[in-house]
Amino acid sequence: MKKILGTVIVFTVLASFACTRHHVTADTTHRVEIAPIHVTVDINLKVQRALDDALNFQGGLDEVFTKEELEMLNKK
Amino acid sequence: MKGKRILAAICFVSLVFSLAATAAAQDRNTVVNSMKERYPALLQAKAQGFIGETWNGLVSIVNPAAPAGAKAIADGESSDRRALFQIIAKETSTPVEEVARQNRIRMYRLAEDNHFLQNQNRQWVLKKDLK
Image 1 (cartoon, rainbow over the protein chains, first blue to last red):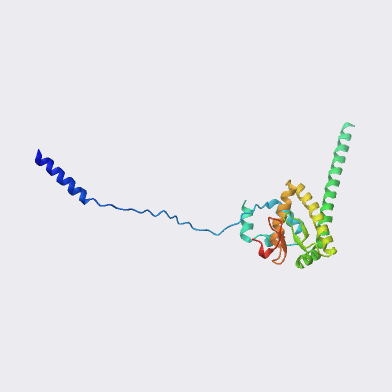
Image 2 (image 1 turned 120 degrees about the vertical axis):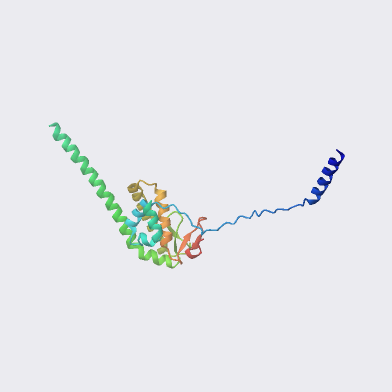
């Protein structure tokens, strides 16, 4: 009985020396991709068309908006 | 007899509506023609830095020391724009303020870099400096 107890104590002591402390540092930095800033303006196409219809001598819709913007507005 | 009365009433209502539509079209044409005639002078006054586009879709004198002619152009243009905003608001069933806002977007985009525009704080800035 004493032999068994002694063996357990010896193993416990050896096992405690075998333990090492590990510092795990987690990287909490989030990589955020900065996209180009798009300024959102509320375009009322119906009103813009009415203004264009009346005031096209100042410049047409194609001068007011880019081709991409017009495509986007026409899709709505 | 009753049929003739109904027919006469329909004709009368049609006539009233067509006259109203013609009057509205004439108003619109009058305003647009007035703006078209003024446009070269307005552009010149903008290029000289006397007149700028305001935040509420109208135009105004940038410098109080601007010549009287420039003030007359600004007043006439703003008056015509107000009338046109009313007409378009009716045509499109949109609030007048929204029509004015859309016109501001339009005019700011059409402005040259050396034209004055009002920023959100109603301060005059050149378009090229507008952030």
